[in-house]
Amino acid sequence: MGEYKTPGVYIVEKSAFPNSVVEAPTAIPAFIGITQKAENGADSLLMKPWKISSMTEYVKYFGEGPSLDFKVDIKTYDPGASRDSEGAITPKDAVMKPDPGIFQQVVEVVETNEKNESVKKGYAFCVTGDNKYTLYRQMLMFFANGGGTCYIVSVGTYGAMLSKESVAGALSALEKEQEITMVVVPEAAYSASCSDMQTQMLNHCVKMQNRFAIFDVQPKSDENEPMALQISKFQTGIGANGLSYGAAYYPWLNTSVLSEIKPGMVELGEGFQTHCRRFFGSDPHLAQAIEQCMAKKITLSVGQSQIINGVLYKYDDSGATPEEKQKKNTIEISPESQTVNRVNLHYLLVKSSPLYQTAMKALKSHLNLLPPSAAMAGLYTMVDQTKGVWKAPANVSVNYVQSPSEIIDNAAQMDLNVPMNGKAINAIRSFIGEGIKVWGARTLDGNSLDWRYINVRRTMLFLEESIKNAARAYVFEANDANTWLNMKCMIENFLRGVWKRGGLAGSVPEDAFSVHVGLGDTMAPEDILEGMLRITVLVAISRPAEFIEITFQQQMQKS
Image (cartoon, rainbow, N blue to C red; front, side, top):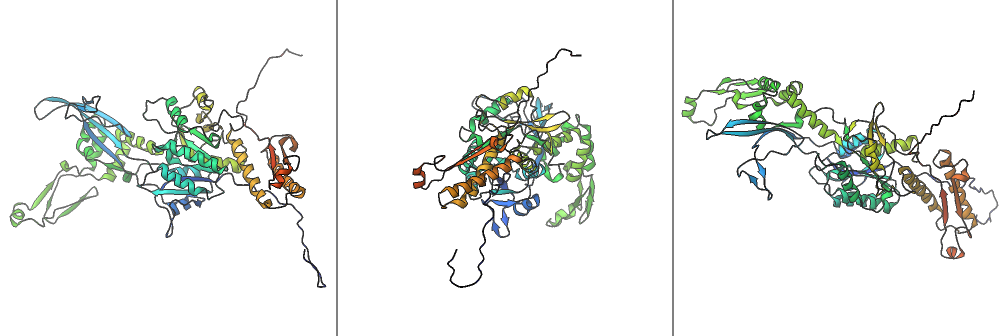
């Protein structure tokens, strides 16, 4: 208040209400991955966290999914070929059977070779291709399951490889963003450096102390690998530090993000056109479809052209010598050239050929098989917005999912939920009449009574961040009873509001929380001399009823 020297009227405004705690956000995930582009106009967004709130914005700044290019081919091999201990193929000039890839069906026949000898020959109908850039489809799953505002950090464009170095750079960039509360790297599960990336994510969350990591378990190295070994690899790779700051989900999900396989996604290899007749016996419809789309035999004169089944045939003799022109005024094109209208052939095979239908179904399933982390980030957001961060993100349905990739029953979940090492993995299960549900709510620190549950850890992060931000206003204020009282009332009012909404357990506020601050309570005289103001907040966070036991007992008839 200034010193009054001039006569007049002076207005003095006084604050009627104390400072309040503003709730920190709880559902702002950051996704790290490779995108089609990363630009805002002329500005590059590579390695820059960028905030979006819809798929429209994602496409605007980061583009769409990769162009899918898978090959349908028929490869020959020698059924008797094998590899010795040194990797050499025997017999010497034999061809090994190709890897199964996405889909494979084989036919083995006896043929006559050039020496007029009967030999066994194998033909493998294969679908092969790469599916490593999945962030676009992961974002579709995120928004389909309740996702909203989020950050995207693009570490490169299609053609680049996700590495632990690029993830480390992205995490370093995220340190500058305060409102992020979750970290997800969906494409890490496809990388050989997955364990290193996941460890980096945990260390980042421990350092920031305001965010939570969601992990995927890497797929099996081969289809015969037992689930126990697959889980053990993840638990070993994740380490032992900061486990309460992360949660893992299993298995991967058979989604419905991709509705159909279009002609532009598949290419028919030369082997398909050359050896397709080997499969006519097992699939007569394959022969009929190819014959319908095959170019018929036609004769063309010089300069003449004709379109058959969408294919243009033209005879042009420019560049030929006069003698050649006199000898050949017409040209004959026959079905032996194997020229095919591929678009028509694809749709015809999809409708009629059981073999091709099975191959395309396998390809569609391969593309729709996605790790669950992005969908879980969406469910975290949905649960936070509808019920609060203190509600466990479990017993909720997952959208856009047809089935889990692995069937988990009660016996199988026992080792996932309560393992000896405490590194719990939350199961996603299918229940008859209920759909696909998340059936677990534990962090990776399952042996800790303090941080066993996801909602407990995330609620504590929410309370800590909210109170921390509010306390900044009192830095350099007088370290006296007035300041202590103001801060205590501010924190108690905030916690009372959380308690009323069910975030804290207790029939009355005194049972749910207590705040202690002041000389003789939380501080000694030396603390005041050193500029320390210590506050102790005790809270009883709501915990989920993970195991419900109902006891029935008969009683004597009373009337």
